[in-house]
Amino acid sequence: MDTAQSADRGPQVQVRFHTRQQKHAIPDTAILVPTRLRRFGLSEIINHLLDYAKPVPFEFLIGGKFLRSSLQTYLDSQSLSTENTLDVEYIESTLPPKHTASLQHDDWVASVEGHRRRPFFLTGSYDHFTRVWDRSGKCLAVLKAHEAAVKSIAWLPSEEGSDAVQCISGGQDQKIFGWEFAPDQNTSRIMFECAGHTGSVDSLAVNPRGTHFASASWDGTVRVWTISLDDIEEEDREAEQGRKRRRTAGKAVPVKVSQSVSTLEGHVGAASSVVYDQSSGVGDTLFTGGWDHSVRVWDVETGINTNTMNCERVILSADHTANSSLIVTGHADNAVRLWDPRAKDGLVVKLKLSSHTNWVSSVRWSPANLYTLVSGSYDSTVRVWDVRSSGPLHTLGAATEVGQKVLSVDWVDDIILSGGEDSQLRVHSGKV
Image (tube, rainbow, N blue to C red; front, side):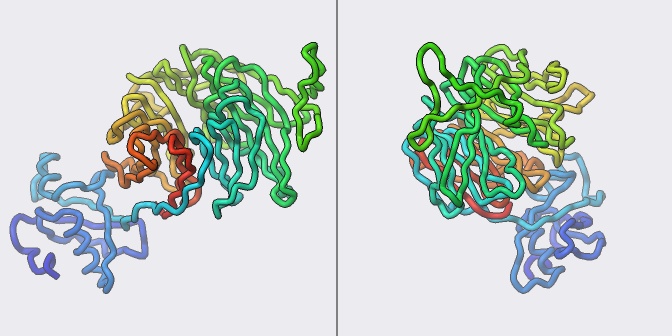
């Protein structure tokens, strides 16, 4: 091997390689390697030591960050000499997710979400409709009730033993609807309607226990609602204006109208995003982001804003992961930021990722990987990030034409979903 044969040429440094992927493990022994080597040369060494007939590409981390230069450049940047021994972790490289499907809508796709247990996708569109899709690309249901764009959606926990799936949708018409769809019978119904917001409902989140959900609105408030139908008063809507019952299959049916159990007020301007703390598995803490440049922490039970974390720009989207307890946010300055709400040193913004060239409209953590997340932007791209690197791992084309905004992304299993101005739900598959 060329790298092995030239190992005695030029400056060298001792490197101790290790990996958490046991199938690729080598003996824990320090070896001398040329400082001129970059990722490809180091990958050749690992393949040589493992005696792989078919080369496997690897990535390398030093100090928890991906190596994106030669070893010599790294040494110089850290003011280290070749007398030091470098501790280098290596992991198998992944290929970019592959575009597998584009599912056409009649207007912009504002919101997308994959089901965590069932093979379904959910979309909300500017054509006023919420749609349920299967993973083969078939539209199973078109849910009609909103009178304006559907800006936010979320799956609800399904009843045990039931074939039906349930979801909620929020729209620019200031309304939220709860839906039930039975695939076997190909039927759908409105379970309840939520009344109270006076602005577009731009974000929805269901608590980990599946008992309540929260909504963030352009009216600046965040509201918490019960999911239990037993706790929602039925209103047969015989108002002075006449009958206002919803119609299912041509028949007028009474709709249960829910009032929020609490209203959280604190944001100055629109509340753009809401997500429950996933760490406890209970849902007693909410994180919200807004146009006032703040991420706020709320005690759901008391309704108190317990902490406010600020940055320089409008927050458009947020997500939280139990894997690291970090919050990721997308911003109007084209950046992705990582926040640690537990920080005691005042430095709540732990990392700023810059690569997008327009507003970052949507962000989601990987459901399986501690370090990876996905972002969608008005620059027509979806980017996959590993927070141990300053640049994106992969950049995915996510629009039919340059300039068409990506409005929403999600990550479920090995599937990345996106939707936007090209009126398509785009599906990318591949392990990252």
